[in-house]
Structure formats: structure tokens, C-alpha cells
Amino acid sequence: MTTPPDSPALTLATAAALLRAAHPDAEVMDVLPRSGGQLSAVYEVRCADPAHAAVVKVYAEQWRWKQAKEVYVHGLLAGVDGWPGPAVLHHTGDGGPGGRAATVLGLLPGVPLSEASPAPGPDRTRALYRSVGAALATAHRLRLDGFGYVTTRVLDPVPDNGTYMRRQFARKLAEFAELGGEASLGRALGAFVARRGALLDHGRAPVLCHNDLHEGNVLVVRGSRGWRVSGVVDVENAVAADPVLDLAKTDYYAVRGDALKREALLAGYGPLPVAAGELEDLLALYRLYHALELWDWFASTGERAPLPGIAADLAELAEGGTA
Image (cartoon, rainbow, N blue to C red; front, side, top):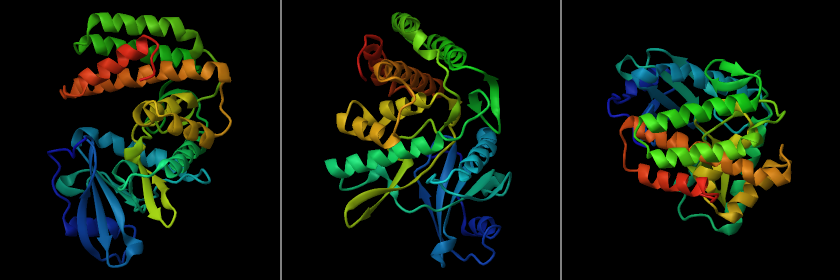
């Protein structure tokens, strides 16, 4: 995804004002754009003292509310021992460029795994994905009061996964139809959900799910033994849900049928909260949900190029495939 086109540049003076709220003696030397998304522009702020370096996220006006969500979720995760995410150093509703909402985060070392070059070999890939699985298991130690979308609370919480996911599937299938999705594919998706819907009814408690842990949000550094995970970023999609839903997001976005990555992800996660005989069917159902949500998202933004590929994934999944 690209940096929001209407985001004004973060100047040295504005960056210094933001950082000095956390580090009064910070001397800003440079501001560098980093890979961001459609909801916020992201900058690395380098300082004379490397300990003062930070990341600044500047939110597009219509996504200002996302700032409060991220600050809240980061705060929750800060209380979980071993969570490898950044600390929130400062946040303001109007202190960024152009009067935008801005959040200052501690700078984690490394580059996104998706940008690691040269690419890690099999042994390092196995170690990296074990670390990704362990990071998800760490986040999932946080239990929440109900199933639902997270802002500074769980919105419209429901007490059980079946009710929540049926509501979500209904919404996403309706959006698929409204946004011009192929009617026959929509019917096939609905039929698949109906056939496997009983898998959604279980007694697992809702946990905090990162809900976007792909290789673009996993930071890695290269040492003497190769790449290792140094941090996890971007919690703006967090939900309170079944932990397997989170594993399925990483499976669909990053694993993509790679047996080595899948095995390492699950091994790193540790004991799974689902019977072994149900895991594959439930992962397939949740992968379909994530693909459907992604199709709806791109269609709603007018970005049509990815839609055929995602539709092909949906068709394969509805036929019992492993996209």
C-alpha cells in the first residue's frame, strides 16, 4: 500500500516538537519517510542521540479515530511480558503536519521481513516463523470481555464466537454483492460458510488478535547467524476474537501454502486451542473470511487491480482448496 497522497511532509521542526514531548533534549537530524499505508503516513526520525530516535505516524483526517485505537491497543500489549512491539512515547490530536493527529513510537531496529535481502534460507525462515507464532501466542494471553472490533473498547461485543463470526460473514458477503462481486461466487462462498459454520461454535474466550501479522509488519535484523525477528508493528486492525482467526490471517497473507512456514508458525505458537482434527477445516474457513474481507476492502477503495487474484483465491477456497 502507498502513503496517503494528501499527507503533508513532516518537517524537522515539527518532528522536533513532537519528540521533545518525550525526550526534552532530543536533537533531530533527519526525517525519512517509511513504508506506510492508506490510513497514515509513517516517518523515521533520526536524532543526534540514537536513543532518542523514533517513528512518527501521521493520520489522514478521516482516520483520526484510529490513533486512539492504536494508543489503546499498544497500552494493553505493553502489559504483556515478552510482547515485541514499540512503546508509545507521545501522541497528540493536532500536533502533526497540517494539524493532523500524530503518534510518536519508539524506534524498533530492523527492516520489514518482506524487504529482507538477501532472503533468508530455509533454516532462518523456520526460525523467523517460529518467532512470529510465538508473538501471536504472546498477544493472545490478553483476554477481552466479548467478541468484536476493538477501538478503545470492544464495539458491539457478543459473548460467543459463532454469533460474532456469522455476523461478520453476513456483513462481508453483503458488501461483496454491493461492491459488484460475482453473484455465483458469492453464492458459493455463502454455501461454504453454511456447510462449515458449526466449526464457529466453541467455548474459547475472545483474545486480543493483532489481525494483520504478515511479513510487512514483522521487523527483522541481520546478525552473525542470519535474520532474526526484532519487533512487530501496526496494531490498527486489532479485534477481540478466536485466536485461530489470527493464525489464519498470517496463514493467508504470509504462509500462502508454504509447508515449512506453516509448520514453524504453529510450532512457535505452541499448544493450539483447537482439536487437531478441526484445525485445518477451521483455518480454511477463516482464510476464506480474510480473503473476502480483503476483496471488499480493495473494492471499496476503488483499487481494482488486486481483485481478480483475490477472487481466484476465494473460488479455490470455496471448492475446498488451500489458497
